[in-house]
Length: 83
Image (cartoon, rainbow, N blue to C red; front, side, top):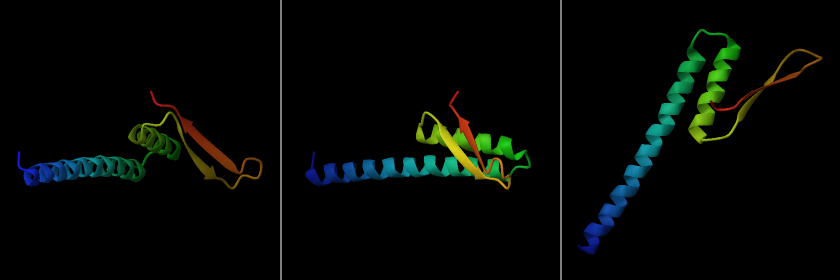
């Protein structure tokens, strides 16, 4: 095969991989935006955000740390393990 064509194929395969990654990232961001924009309970929405984020980055667990106005418990941590 012509070295120039071979180089072009390698370049196109690299670009295809980058585009697929970008589509996956945008899909995750869209899912998170939909979850954040729904009119559900905050805890339920945060659970969905943590769950989708964990799946997107293939993590074992994730967390969101919330700051509250409560003096006895100023921080609230949400943890979710994947199913």
